[in-house]
Image 1 (cartoon, rainbow, N blue to C red):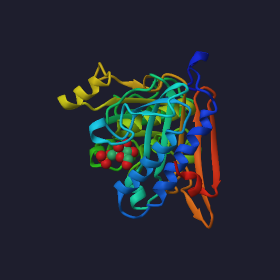
Image 2 (cartoon, rainbow, N blue to C red):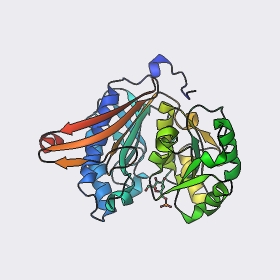
Image 3 (spheres, rainbow, N blue to C red):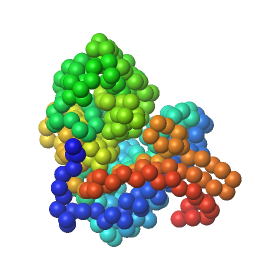
Image 4 (spheres, rainbow, N blue to C red):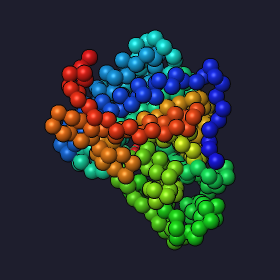
Length: 332
Ligand code: VTB
């Protein structure tokens, strides 16, 4: 079963953009990778942001950043509302996380990626940079097989039943945080396994789409809302289900969300509430993880691995690139 929804032809993104966005995440990943293991999250993130912005501004689009580095006053670049592209071409929404897993990169640990999504203008959820409750599973299950407001134990049992396996064969991926103690305990109480990650829940959610290879059946917990929207775009392309709710626990956050068009602060968002139109997703590995290889610097050649997806066709491509004369063509 696929989560694909039909998109009117006039809303289709030009498919050439699929390859264009690969360049964007490749460049961001290479720039961040030069700072792998330097212990400086800010510098690595800045390098990725600079590179991503430079590349985005070469694209034949009229793009608006809707998921970015933060709101205008706190982010000098790729802030929410920033216009990117050559200002000619289709109107598109852009979601970026130039370095997802800054700590992973700074510590040279597995799983940091440079990632972005592009969608038909006005079709991505404008989410403030707050926390978000998330649950995700892969394709092939009846709608509503798991639910955000069901208990972790209940969700595990429901998923095991739908998959036709014993609960002990289910693995749930969770960010290793104190706030998740109850979730972890709830999952383990059923006999299911928990896999903990220190960071990086965009890749975490994507793992659910291919349980046979990743060993992950479900993603559960609280992570960033921007990462939630990026992950939703990926699942739109490859199939799966996701339910999310913004955590708007202060008046200040509710006000920020209101300004972005959120009318119901308790709303549960499905994939299609977060990504309505045709959309593209790309991620390039910075440090090697279970989804993608990291950047490799060889003599005269830089290697990257990128996954790029398109929702309207459901095509997923893994692109291994060898970059020569990278510096020469990297400049503006
Ligand atoms: C979340 C998650 C991200 O950072 O935003 C997390 O969505 C931050 O959680 O993928 P904490 O505030 O508890 O650290 C990531 O893991 C990226 O690093």
